[in-house]
Image 1 (cartoon, rainbow, N blue to C red):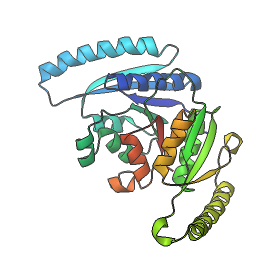
Image 2 (image 1 turned 120 degrees about the vertical axis):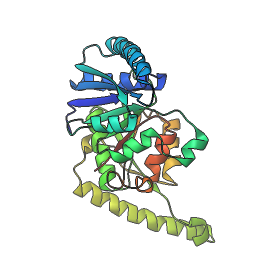
Image 3 (image 1 turned 180 degrees about the vertical axis):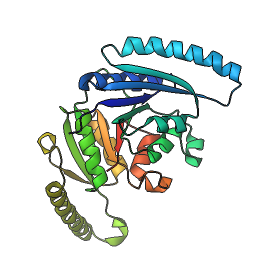
Length: 279
């Protein structure tokens, strides 16, 4: 288990970001970690406007942080700049976790271009926790999307570091490609699914044997038929799930398409708090 010693939370002072600051403080307090609260103001404004805005922003942030971060070793930073660039620059090697609130949904624009959150996740090797829910409790049940890759292993280990007492539930989506076209009868369809399931079970055994995982806190791997996103949403809707953990594929800075469709989709419309980690 990785010991968390330094946490960075980025805020734009919105209600969405307030929840992120509260969750970051909650985690920092539980781990005895240092917390940096960062807000970046757009520097494309006139200097006199930035000066006035900086003073008001810093005062508001100081008041909020002093009420939320009681008992936490906290540093507050309010500075002009470019949010993506400055947040990435602040994710130094000693930062164990970046915490952010969800972005404001803009359905049409989100289809055409990356959000700030997506750009940051794509360009950082630091695990990122996206917060949507109230931070008035410890994480107790974590569902981890599991494709038996190093990325899913990293997500599972990081989830255990963030929530060492939580129960971890690895879930593998058994998505049989072209299932409807490959089988003309129910029996043929069942046989094809059984073949894919047998292969997945073998991969699961190999993964458990070769990876260092927090098995004492893990339930048995569930192999469920279907696509990953609907399965995860169903888990959140039907169960008491606090956190979804997924691995990010592709190297840091890789093309948007290589990040992984599941991680990308969850960033756009997270059903609960989401942790994204790289191997």
